[in-house]
Image 1 (spheres, helix red, strand yellow):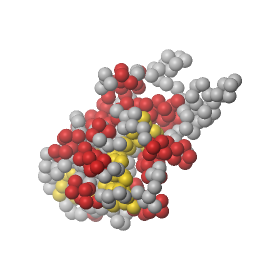
Image 2: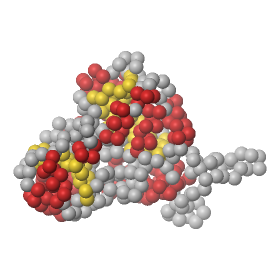
Image 3: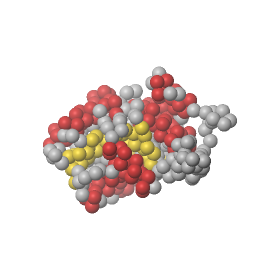
Image 4: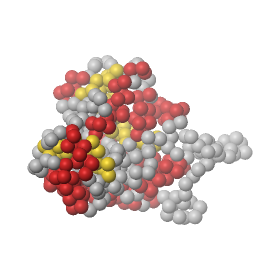
Length: 385
């Protein structure tokens, strides 16, 4: 499919058809894995095929990148060896000491890196409640703030940040806006269409969806000097995703639309059923009408509110750990976005200094029967109580 043709079709069709690509040799509907690390020069010493060396140039990698770019409505996408590699590459590509405004609640690994290590590169960071637009405006340092980094919905409290509003604040300050949209996925939110400059995904999660690939992705609204430097950082640091993992990621993305819609429907049903449970003090899910960010989420998340929710246990942290210990169907494991449902006591994973309440359990809803997931969780709540 050419770019004009892609705009005619829905995300479900684009991913199911893998952008209409076929193997040029066999006409197979599944592309082969291109493993070559080097390419033959032409007689005139050129590379007419466009490929020079395997680190920056690989057909399998580029195919998956084109899929992500199409889903995000982006000019271009880049794949990395992990979500952390993608996120840190943006910061490493900044060309001068920069003040960064970042969401207070976000993936803890990146938050810790920003807090503990970013100063060594000459940058400063201010963490704010990015759902509070007044706090975002107050954090701006005129002439210094050059980058905003927001995550929405934020992991694991699922607070919602108004992307369009923060985009206006960032651009007024002359800054770039990057959005971690891992949980929303391009099926529900396309941050670039709301004014973001770069969108980031931990592709390990929903984009792949099968818990067998570690990957990260960035997509850009338009080419610019920062984007060019990000590409160089990836090449120089060797952070490109491998061909085999790119092929697996492409395979996973072909069911992205149908997977995340089913997961979001189950998550919404579970959230509604769990509200008011005698053992639960709060259900955190942006699809609930009483969620503080529901109206913004409804405006910028089209068709669903994601497959993640958290619950807070009335009796505290020990009771929360006990609930996780009593489940049989839910898997006690880190990560999210796979076809299997996961439960995790987040504060014990994140350790000292985490902003996550100690009574919180994070739930990643998979593709199992939702009635059976509900029964297993409520049985565990009863046993643990």
